[in-house]
Amino acid sequence: MKQSLLYSGKAKDIYATEEDEVIISCYKDQATAFNGLKKEEVVGKGRLNNQISSLIFDKLNRAGIATHFLEKLSDTEQLNKKVAIIPLEVVLRNYTAGSFSKRFGVAEGIALAQPIVEFYYKKDELDDPFINDEHVAFLNLATTEEIAYIKEETRKINRLLTAWFSDIGLTLIDFKLEFGKDKDGKILLADEFSPDNCRLWDADGNHMDKDVFRRGLGEMTDVYQVVWEKLQELD
Ligand code: UDP
Image (tube, rainbow, N blue to C red; front, side):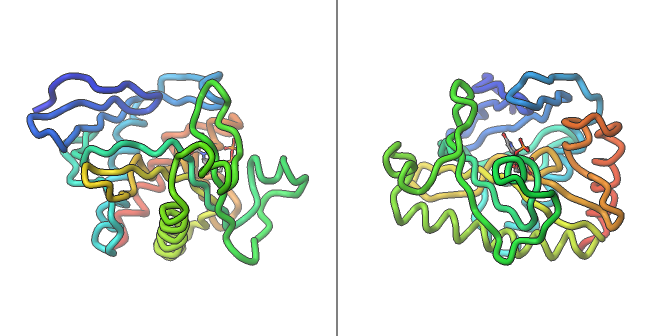
């Protein structure tokens, strides 16, 4: 099934399959932060993120969101439609936190009246700079119509995710999405959705996400395991 290695990322390896338009994503036991400056092997993380992301993407597919997810193959592997990733990190914030709090000098955890969508140019050499819609157009990353679609889809996904996490007692503070284009040019939600790329706070304000690793607050797999167990309570 798994053929040549197409790409090796920080958290996943991507393999070709016998089918041209299908790839296998293999989740790794590696944690990185601060653009790769902090890097550790974390046993069990690959399995947890693959399980969590598979569950979320399956629910998004069933809710009518166009995604790259086809099926979970094993503990650490999933089958995805092949897409050309648009080099944009699409961040949506429901509450202030992280770089937003730092940039604007505001405390973390303030509810935003309206969710805010931000773009970052996905380019490690440049440290993923913060960009606006006009920069996206200048860099030829997406057309005006595609930008509008990506923003609308991100807001729709936020409404679904916020409700699901709320049902299991977690607040979705913010998250990062990536989109890609399939062979017909259709934009699909791609990459992953896991505590690696979102912030989740429990009712006591505990961090149930990668901030545990970034900020040295404890064992990330302990909190990811709790998120995974809670998510399984959903339909
Ligand atoms: N995020 C991500 N990858 C990145 C940067 C951010 O997945 O390279 C996620 C992060 O986990 C958080 C959201 O995007 O859920 C907003 O992150 P922020 O801009 O606050 O940056 P950070 O404080 O994580 O550096």
